[in-house]
Length: 568
Ligand SMILES: [Zn+2]
Image 1 (cartoon, helix red, strand yellow):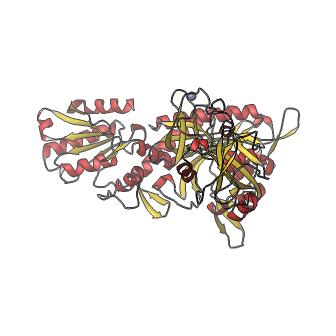
Image 2 (cartoon, rainbow, N blue to C red):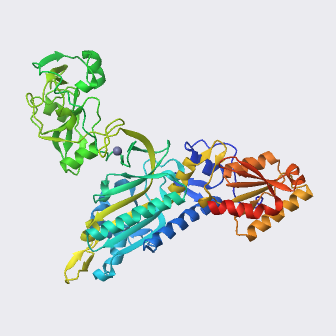
Image 3 (cartoon, rainbow, N blue to C red):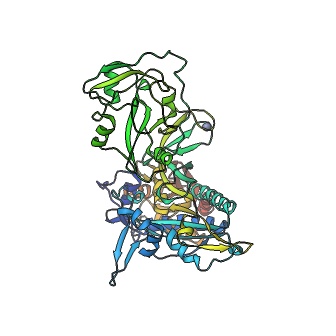
């Protein structure tokens, strides 16, 4: 490809809307262009990257017996009604109506459709396991699309679905895919970490997310500094805390006036106590029923854990009216003593002695509250968010935190969709059983963006060889110099013959301009054909990632470059 012909309109200025490096460089290097909020076109360089990520995915899916299909984007509403997700999906679903007034959606995911696809044709255990996947556009009407390809409303996704006869089969499918994902992300040049995650609305129980640790990430990950444990913050188990019980005798309860102090910060300042001595009492509505949740003052409540514990389908903080009814006090003065609603306490609360809590009375708190003596918890559980410094639940070493970009996810669905859509098979005994399902996704565009987040510098992208749009750019310092131009053309031709993906910068531009573009686009290898090297019979090879420069004899350049590329 000649640079003068390559459709890669580069931008000198950083577009105002681009906050992240990946977004910025994808726009500036001419990989993508925005057509609406969260909706992008891929230009030639961007599409070449996407196709390479897809090729790696296809190879690894094929290795674990995945067969590729292509399902429609437009999906009938009936299937979604059958699983209850037509309503559950809410405003994130793009919906449309055809001329006959039939309802459809643009697929945000394909569990319903694939279950419908196979249910009339998979009949026997002999056809299992079955692992089908596709690479296709998905649609989610994000409330705040941003960060370019990282959170778009139209995005390319690989989604695989597995169908097995029993739990053991599902387990095999799950771990086969898990390990395939490890290989895929490694081959894309990503440092991605599998973390335990909560399954959320999609259903099922076991799930891992593959997180790329990057400052630009939107998900908080907690991981162990000495073992492999890692979990997202919704899921991470909060380990035991040191008990204060041995430290002090229980003092008599004492009501104290605390006018206008409603937050932990205000109370600690007002009473001169530590947050670790306070109990935060929060009144929630669990499917409409009030419940009090207690955590230590320095801890944050984890609503995902609380909801899972209570087994409710809706959980929300109670409104001020309900709080006044339950506690006889305005917001900010709730405490567990004398409360008539069920009390759920975090494990750490049970280890407290002489705690400060709200007095269930406006402008009053109570000192020296002791669990067991002054109140009892109906349930004690891990309901707080784990935080950095907490002990690892596996080995006890301190946890540390980092931001992550989720690039893939593996789920065990079980029979949620097969039961709702009646997808069954006959087992060895001729008995009808529901298919056991798993689903496995990779954000293809997001993976490419995450690669940039981990591989760039202030000048541009530093593509890993495996997914670089082209391997090499050949830059003659002056195209008007006959010797330089002829040498550059000869190298270009020889590299093409050796199956190297190469661009020749044939533009009559200053060398500085050409080098800038080469760095911005991120060609892993730059071959500079300049007068000084050429007088020695050499050209200069510069590696984008390290900046290393080597003089290489012109007659050895093809071999030299092919060798670098083969090492990846
Ligand atoms: Zn550990």
